[in-house]
Image (tube, rainbow, N blue to C red; front, side, top):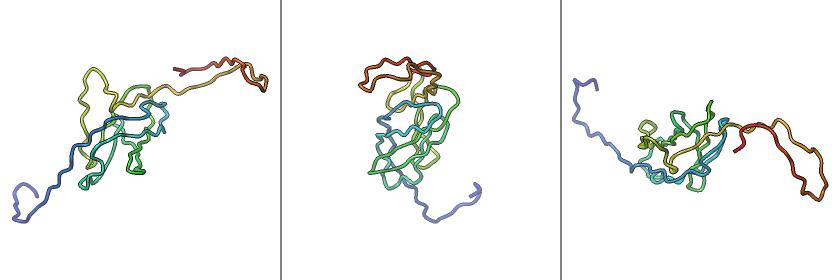
Length: 141
């Protein structure tokens, strides 16, 4: 329709309930991405949900449904930060981030700097274990 034409035919519009993200587990991972998280989300299996999608911040994320549970895989980012995971039931309308000065644990994923080991010592110890090891590098929490 171009705004000047009308129709008398019936057109159906289908509704689905708001998708509510209750938790993300785990809710943190490396900036290189590839962290699989289980989402506790209400409404995703409603029959009118036609194009389920998820975004980490502004980046689309892949997902899988296994045993009626949703698993997303975090996309790669360039800097450590916390982002909101937003679901969409039609692929266009994503749940808005309603937080302003803080992040809700329920819908937030935190990217951490990748761990990089530069050295460790000693390189040997007794087979009985118990040797204390010093690990050098960056990105440790």
